[in-house]
Length: 105
Image (cartoon, rainbow, N blue to C red; front, side):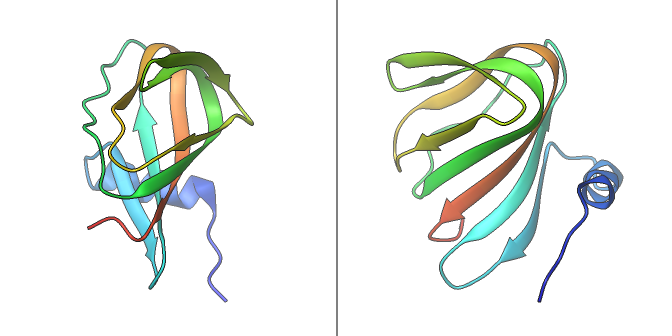
């Protein structure tokens, strides 16, 4: 079994000076922690993999393709491979679990 604590992952992400920390990579998926501060811009470009966002904390809007919705703790968003998407209007620091399938390359 592999088990993780969000507070420890956040510490590791901060120690590596990055917005994204991949902490699990398996044959069919990868999982990471993505963090954006209030007011920060999301620099993402479309990915070659399907992905699921699970918002752990914070508040923001997300646009996927032509659709926009508000997200907060407990929100789950699916983004198909190749579709333009980004978080914006981040009003509270955003911490998001990201699941890629197949694994992010």
